[in-house]
Length: 253
Image 1 (spheres, one colour):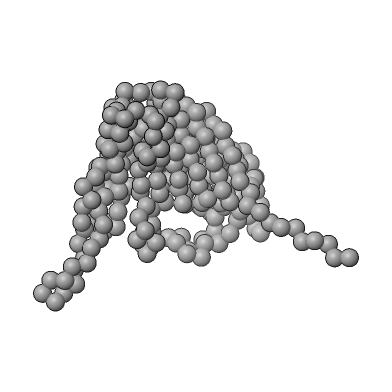
Image 2 (cartoon, helix red, strand yellow):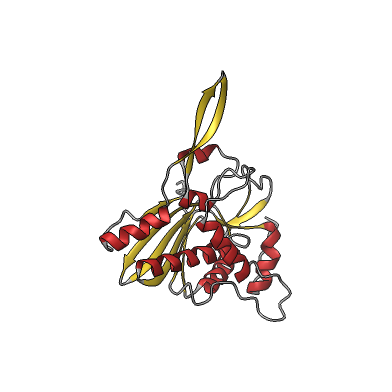
């Protein structure tokens, strides 16, 4: 009699955290225990190895309580970010400026999104940016102030269909919002997310955006819920993560 094969299923992870520091620490600890180890076959770090959750949903109840990760005194590892950097990241998120070498920025997609259009001029094909003339942050603020909390339309899109052709498409794809119980909440989706080099600054900056929007709307600051099928830890940060969490993992296999 043949034994039935065991079907492998995705292993979702759920994190319920108090603040952003707690969320980061819990994710570091969980990924060392449960992260899937594999080699990247496409992307900016092709050929390198990383640990990655199959899928994660994370709730942060009081994100403003402690925004930056805390590194205990005497622990000889660098902090992944600081408030000075996060304040600069806030400016990045609230402006549409970008350099000539950048295909996009999160700020551009939020406050001054553009689409590329092909034009023929004197027999030559040119590609130009066409502004969409929408500031999504201000539109969401306006929507809640004028229409109140009873809507599911106050979502800010980062991703565009054409991003599939980019060498490095946006990791953050959308910022959904919920105004309920007198508080503004963010629901985020990341297609890919660097737990050490991206998570702390991303959530710190987005928390400051949320605080700004809540103040403009005239409500309290609320929770962050973040979802990703690509929250990962690159091999350069494995030793750092083990030092911070006091955990061990064998990376030979």
